[in-house]
Image (cartoon, rainbow, N blue to C red; front, side, top):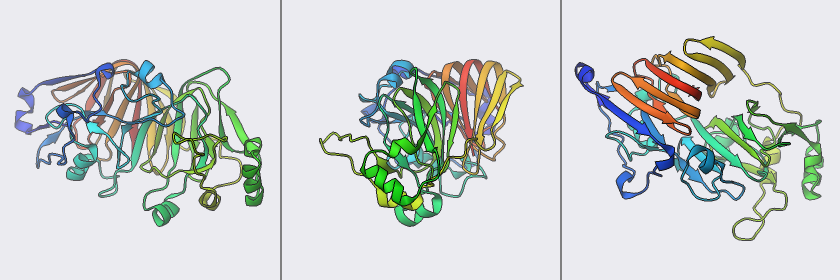
Length: 362
């Protein structure tokens, strides 16, 4: 939870919070009813807080987010929106005096928490965990210009970090060769579109950068973390003949998809990626760095320090193991699946323990 302290009182205030995913609340019972106000305080020091995610029960989801990460959402559980201020799935502050406050309300009332790189009044990113028990639809997302003009929200560039997968799992990532819009439409109609998509095998630790306009689909048996722009606009191209919960085929969005899709091979490398490098307390790997977000994994084996520096908040998602996040006199415990938000105007914080953490900034 974001706890506010007067600087002169900081040295005598201690709050220790423990986050246990297997007992995690969804944020919508009486004890954690979302509050509309974000609790704005002037001239106070802002410290990290824990977040409860929004859950999505899409038909292709499975049980791994429950079994491996302790999430207590619906079954099937397809997505856990760990960092989100989107109206389709708003995270909820899970600790401290603002517990139960919607994350979107907090950032509206406390824009300085986002940092100088964040556009005024606009939270830019989402961080998710995704469990694909079945293939997702073949789909594409628009860029910002098209998204704002047609849908009234950002487009969607995203990045996938593979956490686990079944033997032989793969995903679709762009095309094997450039094709025309006429060929694409014909292949969608005659169920052969996957024959010209690039089929990429996956392994834990792999990274895929999905620029807006890239046609793609997560395959069955893949568990991943996703960092993306703050958007929920998806144009479904092909759905393998699947029907929805109502027994009817799920709608396709072919005309819009053809306006935004790059019908060509995808760019293979993530921008800004760098190999792992040793740091005090572990190993840091830059997964991607682009205009929308920067994502790193920290293999924690000791004590790691980070100073936000007012430029950007830091999202911390524990992918494995356990870590203590210490900032000022506050300590948060992150077990596997735990998510914390460190405001940009927080003081230097440390992560101590053993595990793998996903760090997202802008």
